[in-house]
View 1 (spheres, rainbow, N blue to C red):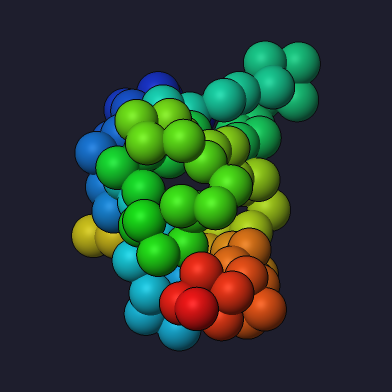
View 2 (cartoon, rainbow, N blue to C red):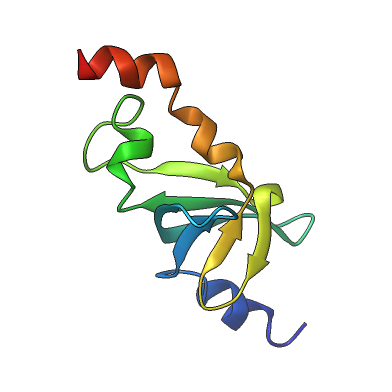
Length: 96
């Protein structure tokens, strides 16, 4: 448990990718549940415009539930669920 705070702060600045290899954004902060002593959410900014342009204003970020995280290394891998935010119908309408 001695290394936990250092490990948590080391998440900040890491890039987040879906497990399909799509860039999602960069971790700016970490939300904690102090009672349970666990990470609950990742605050992600520098977002991939293709995924978030229809749902998030430029310069804003999103909270990604930590339960979506599949692996933490040089980058953080999350479930591909995030890619479903971009609806195919919306993409086609925007192109017209």
